[in-house]
Length: 318
Image (cartoon, rainbow, N blue to C red):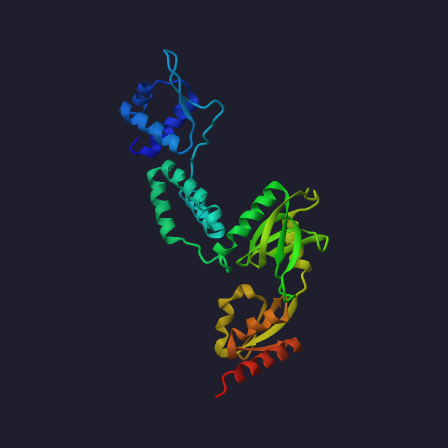
């Protein structure tokens, strides 16, 4: 046993398989000094693994009764997957789970064999996911914290919500069921007291959220995965047809996830279809490509893009 992590794992299993072992016996089995064994006990305590001792001729060191340490037998890829998952938790949740994620990672790295530790160190420096939140995560943290607590405790919340369809925030009561991260935004899904139905709200549009003493019972028929699937299917969609000029046809390949269909034309141009929840969103997407693209249909989208271009051009006239 040539490293501390391996000895710690072995020590845990020795205590798990045979309670009340003397420190001197454990030192002999591990091939280390008595002082080192006591240092290992301190390390296990710091990692949250419950070890206690009993005095007397029949006493010794044991794990707390009922505690079982699962074997950390990972392949290199499995170890990397766990560590990268911890990184995603920090990226998505920020301060809410930062310390917990870092603590879990520290415990894992202390227990991994040397070869896996090297692989994990490489992965953390080379395989990085970032920029997943499109809104300021720090500004959303207070609301996310209260919503997370409300979901866990089944408590209703009161909030001011700024819809993109009305000019001023409105007061809402909500029984929050789940927090969901999609398309770079955080959403809370729950039963809206105003509309008396399950609705989805973007967290960055929530203001002055507060927990109420009122508790709620979530409908047993609610299934989060089914709701998300059906929401996408029932949400009103506008289908736009765009044409990329031959000189800019390569732009289509750079954003494959945007298009419902892709149809190369004989003249080298490419026609694509785009599903959008609103005309405004479709117009914004179209204008992002500038003169490389032309709207073929629907007519109302062509008109909107033309009007936006005229207004924009007017702002830049000498």
